[in-house]
Image (cartoon, rainbow, N blue to C red):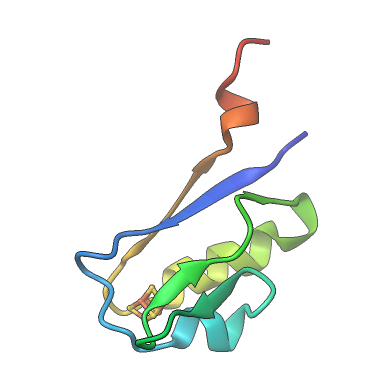
Length: 74
Ligand code: SF4
């Protein structure tokens, strides 16, 4: 119910890999080493991890927001 959505801005991700090193449950490397999001709606149990990963990204390329489910009509 409190799912969060993560997005990586591919225009500013430089492929440091900190996100997928820190949170492989949520992020992975693409073929070129840039970060990609593995799961659309991050379950509550991974929210703190997602937040840490976003804070750890040197480029601030990761944004977290409410999932589409959360944004949907109540
Ligand atoms: S830590 Fe940031 S810059 Fe590095 S791969 Fe992940 S999103 Fe990209």
